[in-house]
Length: 251
Image 1: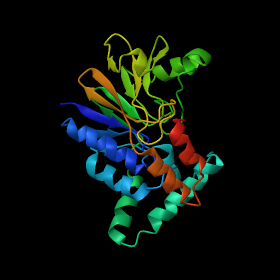
Image 2: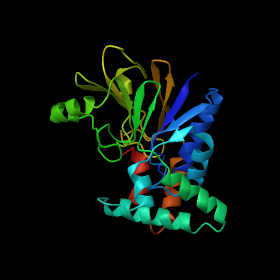
Image 3: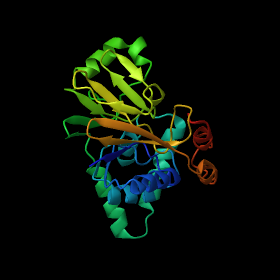
Image 4: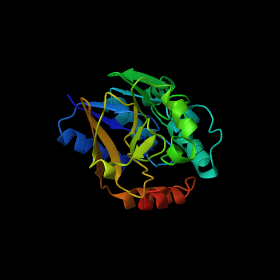
């Protein structure tokens, strides 16, 4: 049976609902989340509730970690968003939802091994906060080599919000180079990024996720009401307007 892989929701309820509707329309029942459920966006509590309900498991992202502990090393808008998110979760009037959300965040794992693959939020050697950028295959080949040494065959990551596949050549292939589908090759190692549900950064504002069906990975892009999220962010003084504007531009 196929599985859906989602990542980097970033409290974007509108994008998450569209992605889940597409998953449901395809009859996919198993969903994995690679982390960053919260941070940046205006609907952290609702997104947490949905992930708790719908996902088989979820991993710890750097923004989930920041809300739970401290936003160390964050820029000003990300730090403010983390503190605002924490305040929103703490302001829950009912004790049971409050307890469930914090307990869920506190139990998020930093890595998972499933279907012969390694699953992390960021990278195999620093699972919460190391970025693997497409340009690294040219500018930092030793970094890519060291990262691939940490995996046996295949790894799924999020964090950069950029959809695509790294191979140990090393090289990077965006979905446009793959006709939207990557077939896992038993003779090469790969790192697969499903992109971001709630804050894509590849100049395509559409929500992104992936479908894993055996050795086949399909990348899916979906339009959603971005302006509705922009308007929500603008209405929250603690959140930078830039966090909404970037959604319109996919950056």
